[in-house]
Length: 196
Length: 294
Image 1 (cartoon, rainbow over the protein chains, first blue to last red):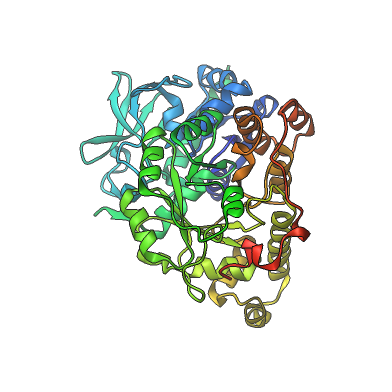
Image 2 (cartoon, each protein chain N blue to C red):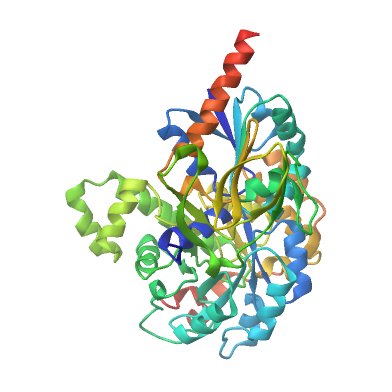
């Protein structure tokens, strides 16, 4: 299995390290030809305006959308979530993969960035350390979107089929559970393809 | 419980800037041009380093009014500079809500001996360094990000290259040492021992390490990336050039495609004149900003 980490800008190496800990090969992808033979993709944290401009400029947006259409799992953290959102409050959306509307910098500037323990619906009462850095938040989620976690009353993690997005950064922690979720989804998709 | 200003949260913002370009701006209009071009952050200043150099006298933190207007103009992070050791300027900048503070040799140092105790702040700091010992001393004081000093405001990349090569070479040496040789190396570098152990373990500086000081062209940015920088600061290079908009865009694209000469050739075309540079040997010893605050 090979999982790509979109490497136009942002915290790429952290995702590759955590994938390696899970026993999976993670590769940085920044050119169109890098997308062949990927089983899943991670869109990391970074600056969404920068990443959005660069994926468009170098025609990577079409490649990512195609992957999602083929049913391959895609996981976005923070800016990655912003890129995947169907709508962005007050701005033009980028890839429009998940039926959510996000608000950028929802908590304010860096002084308001924080970390805290979150409850994730999939894992009962075993908390997940949520690291929120100038994070977005989901302000509306469509009917096909499963809400996985809240921070207070705000939606912080969502899933829609094989698409996963968190407004926080699991790659800045030692906790592999979100990455394992992506790897499991990629494994199931692989099996299905082989079966057909 | 919600925890703010943790080391992870401070270092984390710098991790999110990797592979990006941070641009010096002096007006809201310039800040918008930088954001539009794909900058990952802007540095809000009253004057770019080349103008600070030309003006002489004492250079201080920017007027909060200037910084506030720039903060209101863009949605990307905004950084601002304070004088080395001037912790009250830092308190003021933090109160403004700036996202990152640069304790910078570009401004006139306020303390000849001590840097700011950066651990005391919620807002993260970036500091300049000329070698690994200096970088680790700043990290020991709480810097969450480092950058080369280079020679600011010259449009001459030679000093940034020298500093980055030196730091990378020193890291390679540390990695090759035996555990029982590390203390002597820490002494010789003037580096905190625990942080030097961290360098050996990680094979890199333990925080994000950008290039700064003299970067003026897309090729300069790509050079610094090929030498191992995590990203680049461009100070005077953009808004002192003939066509800032195109130059800003092409430096962003060159930083992404630093290892692809064909794309570098494409993005370097027709940018107009770069800023006029300064040959380092023509600077007097006291005109070298890099020697401030070691």
